[in-house]
Image (cartoon, rainbow, N blue to C red):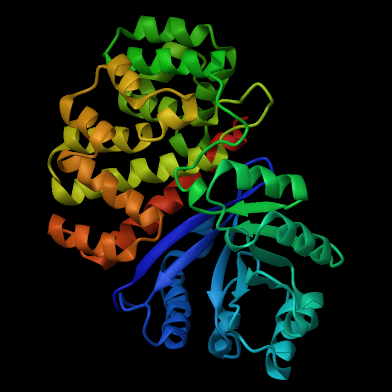
Length: 414
């Protein structure tokens, strides 16, 4: 299998729920040379990669935006991708000729969705294609207020969804939402930030308290008492323990018994993930954070397993660092305050505060990967010395699939 560079950027709706991902593939590091050939090769890599794992396992119910050039669009391989999960994102430099029009019409009839990439103005070419398009991605980083407002008005004449790409800060995000954009994307969300503001509500404080009790190895009765004050959490825990997947012959009705069956490590992981899903006062939850935190935790754990296969304690710490790395964004607190509150081990605190040490460097690797910084990722993998890009890509695909399952489990327990 050829070396694959894979990345992803979340696409959020107006309520900051992840509705899709743009998948970033490259066939090699020299992306500035033979761009068309690389993009066609990259699309074929997608087919190979997801053919092995199953795109539905990686994306869950969300769609994947995949950039395509004319060469790939007109090839037979385009129909191998699952229509229910794919949005073909046509690059700006594709000439909209009769062949492309006919193929897009064919794709639409078969149920595929089509997006236009990097739109900054309308011209005759794209006017011609707009009746077949589902999503228009507007590059908001190069437009001033008047240009953006004017373009938005023109696009609203068509029955298309508007997606603002290259959203780099809170002000631009708010402006796009005010103009009526349906979706947002950009490195502003790579961390991701929460537009609606940060407010620590009681449910999150309770979860933080519960996490502290578990980390400090408190008595089960203390953990049980804390859970009793949270009926919703107790119900969620019972439902999870009694789910068909656990294979229990009897229904568990005791909180204490549920904790013992689940085990402290799994309980800790469940609480960590739930911290991100706790509802805000306006009823919304931090969906982008949930997904990113879950992927970071699982991927960092998998890297730790590859690094130190017999050190379970190190692997558990790696998972925790990955999940906790976004808690400051969620709670609107300084990471230093959180680290002090949690009283975690030195290697974990150094990783979270300054990206130092083994875990810190591996967390920095994941963050670079989230932003699509492929050359940085390649250099850092070489420095680590125990993971190839192929192996890292496979670990990330598995983490994506795991995060999707976790998300589905949490949503089904709401």
